[in-house]
Image (cartoon, rainbow, N blue to C red; front, side):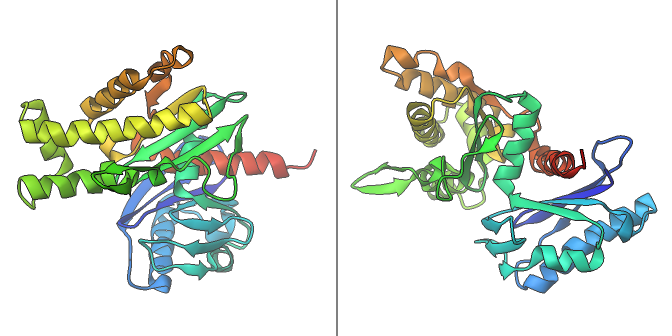
Length: 303
């Protein structure tokens, strides 16, 4: 499997090469995303891919597979980047454009959270179980798999970030209450405009009362979202990733404790033990692309 994989985000593009022999990520490169022009963003991805190929001394017609994780709505069948909030693509024909440069490559593309979820699902070896992946970073998103198949519903199954919670006299989404962005906005109002999530967590660990209020509130909100997942789907395992979780282990522990405190029915006793932190961390998306391309190869190989 000679493959290129890329995790395309609103701020950065992470990419790597996979060889037939090693089946591991090699020549990892990262570049800034381009948010102002759809063609310029595509050119940026091409540039990263060609830098990798130059280092590996291979040509574009030698690439057999390409795996892509893309935020927002993706048409995996027709190869379209349909709509991305933080990228300039609108029904962008990503697959067809890549085919012009990589004529022999099979291209697998999906939402970036779905790719990361597939990576974690593979690592945790949950072949016969129901599995949920939740990411807490700039926003909050989630993905479900059952026996290795995505549970997409009509399109957004399992998206706990859209859960509405009480916020004073209003209802506000979980994402707008407890994501990294939300925590940062709360901190700016209370402390100063330059304080980061890590800075708020440092103050929390120093037992600053205002920081404790911000962090505990965010943890309770996320725990409520997880509680809904367990109530409706009852997954065997929930893996939580994303920069806010990976970089703030104390926050993850607090979420689990809040979830434990939230359980009232004996049938749900111990659900917090089924919540684990990501194994693949920041590379979950790239590994998900790798595993998806490998799976596509198996499915399409002649008997």
